[in-house]
Amino acid sequence: MTVPFLDIAGLRSGYREGTVLHGVDLGVQRGRILALLGRNGVGKSTLVMTIMGMLRPTAGAVRLDGVDLAGRRTDEIARAGVGLVPQGRRIWPTLTVHEHLELAGRRRARAGRSGSPAAAAVSRRSAAAMYELLPRLAERRRQLAGQLSGGEQQMLAIARALVTDPRVVLLDEPSEGLAPLVVEALLAKVGELKAQGLTILLAEQGIEFSLALADRVYVLEKGTVRFSGPAAQLKADRALLDQLLAV
Image (cartoon, rainbow, N blue to C red; front, side, top):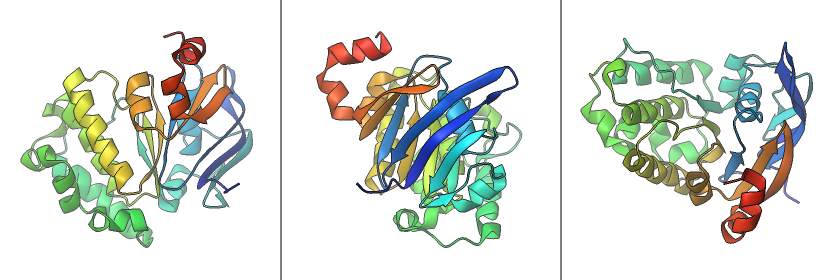
């Protein structure tokens, strides 16, 4: 069995109110998309924040290409090659699109980390490469981010993560609050990133969105993994999907 590129083992984490993740195990193979599904409050965002170092785990490992990142600072985890597209986008409204990409690119340069094969596929994920991947951002490059539409802000959040030259990207609820046509466009762009070989962990409530992209699916319930298997299995078994997610 191949060791996952992003390997989560026995992860426990939570808040002052109590533990949310109760020994989660999951793995993402290099160049694949893992979809993390589950209802509100089951621990999807908690898992993303713990991987990214925004929450400190109480037990377990978060290994990227064999190196354990659990408990490290967020900036150290980012320099190791983990990029985050956070829930709610969290763009800076008074900066332009280009200023977002410039600042994120400077962080990559300071880190001094060599480009990965996936990064090389899009010219080391420069701002210019982001404008090629996301032409709407090129049109809006001088626009203040706070004046962008929701879909444009989501594309900016993705581009901001990509210009840091990540080895794996965490996408937390990327389709949340977006119109159906915008979700379709987002689906196509994430599909392009997958085709370029980027490794992605996708935490989503949008079932159809997730199953259209994912190679493998994990379903969380009360902070534990209730199901793991190929996305094709859930696509083909609607009864199982209904049982797991009450769709």
